[in-house]
Amino acid sequence: MRDRAAADIAGTERPALGVGLMVAAMLAIPVVDATAKHLAADYSPLFISWARYAVASVLIVPLGLVRFGPAIFPRHDLGAHTLRTLFLVGAMTLYFVAIATVPLATAISAFFVGPIVASALAVFLLGERFSPRKAVSVVLGFAGALVIVDPTGGGIEPGLLLAVASGVLFGLYLLATRQAARRSDPVKTLIFQCVVGALILTPQAIHAWEWVDVADLGFFALLGGLSAVSHMLSINAFRFAEASTLSPIVYVELIGAVIIGYLVFGDLPGLNVWLGAAAIVAAGLLLLRAAERR
Image (tube, rainbow, N blue to C red; front, top):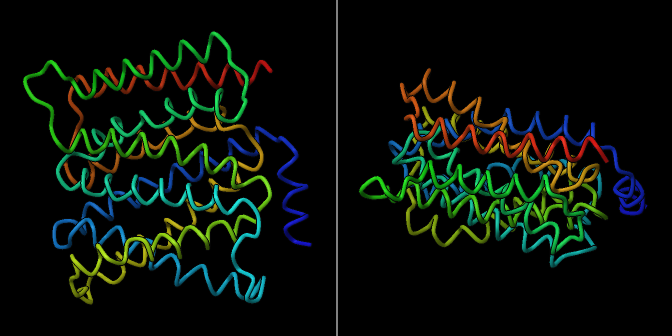
């Protein structure tokens, strides 16, 4: 019955609600990233990536058991759920490795190639409508990503390449999320993501295992807890709006990343990052205008 109700809700497009939920999710993520960057000074990014899912699982599984009993995993679209989890695990692992070596705002700016990938592929894979505005936004966003990476600058930082690769996987995650969210309860979707993600990452966590200092337990709890909240918000967002509408909202994350990166780590992006980010944000605004005119 709950799955049927979720299916009925998912069939109703409410773009404004979807956008609002996505904005809230994106404002939470820079705090997660800053926490991961702080922990990366003492722990392996591979261990941190696993801990994020493991802690989130400890927090979200009891909620699922209270609501659903033993039936805590989705029953429909398991292929899409598995794909979105694999894409997200890969994206976040690469991203945590990236932010260990490059500033937050720089990494996130390169990571934002993801929504461009999602907007382009949504037309072909999800049957979403194509328009000249979407075409211009994809070209503009791709150009912005090139400016940030700066392949003509005499050498590309490996951390930037990892951030770009993470963004590509994140774009695929956005598409898979849109498909998986259509008929599943968001709590079940999140539980599947956290538990399966933790299991997938367990081998690399064992390889990079480090005992956590008592003083850092609060940071790991914040890492997993806020991750769970942000993903719950974004999963619900995709139940009410198209992937091409929501994808540009991730640019809100850049604002938080710049502020936190400067206040906590003393990092400020270079000129090429500002210019590239401006082009990517402009691309996102074009997509939003296109969505508003429908």
